[in-house]
Amino acid sequence: MKSTTMLNILVTGSDGQLGSSIKEYKNVYPNYNFIFASQNVFDITRVDNCFLKQNSINTVINCAAYTAVDAAENNQIKADLVNHTGVLNLALAAKEAGAKFVHISTDYVFDGKHYKPYTETDRVSPLSIYGKTKLAGENALINCTLKNSIIIRTAWLYSEFGKNFLKTMLNLAETKKNLKVVSDQTGTPTYASDLAHTILEILPLIQNDKTQIYHYSNEGAASWYDFAWTIMKEANLPCKIEPVNSIEYQTAVQRPFFSLLDKRKIKSEYGINIPHWRESLDKCLRKMGVKI
Ligand SMILES: NC(=O)c1ccc[n+]([C@@H]2O[C@H](COP(=O)([O-])OP(=O)(O)OC[C@H]3O[C@@H](n4cnc5c(N)ncnc54)[C@H](OP(=O)(O)O)[C@@H]3O)[C@@H](O)[C@H]2O)c1
Image 1 (tube, rainbow, N blue to C red):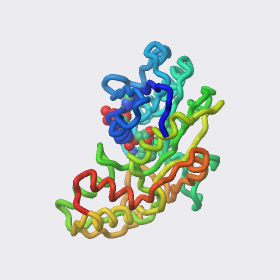
Image 2 (tube, protein in one colour):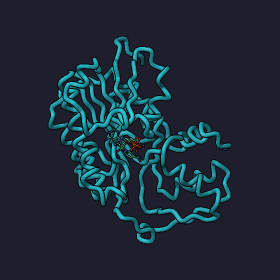
Image 3 (cartoon, protein in one colour):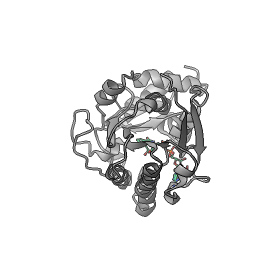
Image 4 (tube, rainbow, N blue to C red):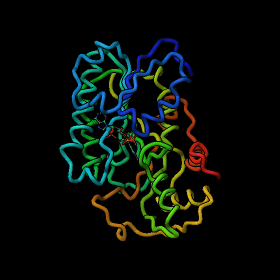
């Protein structure tokens, strides 16, 4: 699906996992002119309302976020500044410029007590500061009544870039014979490259009078234990993965026990196909040069 009009696209937080994954596609879309902006050149907490208009930017993909879920518990002000105020700043600038706006949010806006895949209209009730600040960002954008804007809630992102569960497991497997991994939290590992591709494919089709929320993850379901076990199996690593309950692996923050996302809305409205997480894991491992 190729756009015929030129899109001048600002990608914020461009050195993160999703931003870096979008960069990988930069030569695939001849009608997309990308401006990749990392935090040190473009801080979303300090955006002038006129910035987008002055620079003829007609599309924003906001990949910038404070994503340190545990650290956020002790850094609420910083997390809120980026995940809430930063989103508001960008939304106001997008409104001024009449720009399309794609914002990314999280499954952690839910409390995980639902036990069937969450739809976009299900009740939100974040358990963590991270989830609360991301929800505040969603609401700030929605309250801006910005046309042609969407929020994509995603989950359990991993990629060949930055810090993520896959890379942590591969690193730990170099020195550890056994690893204990929680088996009572269910979600879907999501390859950031699949999300990046979906965003770029649907961009020309985004047309609405008010912000629409969509859910996107890879297909299938897994616990962190299943994910770790499959990583070791696919990468032929001898590290043994043992299941533990969350209660045995206490962290600073409570994570939802169940955060599967119902993806019917994005699939039906934009006609996209979503790969299964196992298929995408293999794709990512091959990209990283891991023999599978
Ligand atoms: N990672 C996940 O498992 C996950 C799950 C669900 C949803 N999401 C959402 O998906 C989106 C992309 O996540 P990701 O994994 O790509 O995150 P990431 O790798 O942590 O990237 C976020 C980027 O934002 C940058 N950033 C932080 N503060 C900023 C600011 N004030 N101005 C501009 N840039 C700033 C960070 O720069 P520094 O590195 O220099 O701080 C980083 O490069 C986020 O909205 C996240 O909340 C992620």
